[in-house]
Image (cartoon, rainbow, N blue to C red):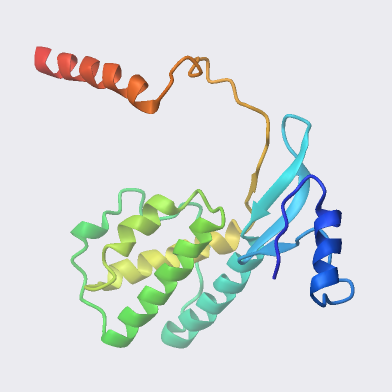
Length: 199
């Protein structure tokens, strides 16, 4: 596949067509990229911009996870509002039994799917995925239940997108007068050290 980014993509792709055989009807705005859905949308600023979502990938991943869940447990699939089974759930304190090796393999597969969902724009789950990833080797029953719960969450909240709005946001702070990141950071670090030592 070829992804062409330019102010004049047609001229580039026409030149490519003279060098390589391209399928009829294959040239056009991208509809997907590395598993992500892509489209042109309107940002909050009113400008048209590209958007990326993981909707299709998440839906297919959830269907696969639901199928595996039914095969292994036969239980109904929950529809939670939050990502973890309990708002105060701490996987490092989970004392439930360890999983069998085949279930650990399934856990690792589900964690991988969640990781890629984060890469494709699911910004609502990276913290939970990172926490649960730490238990991919010595996985407990509670960890797997938490992952299954996250897939149930994605099943209910299966639509999310990132708009690449070209508008420069106003943070209320002027950064342009700094020539380098070091010039900005050193005074800030020194101020932090003085505050820390004063306590």
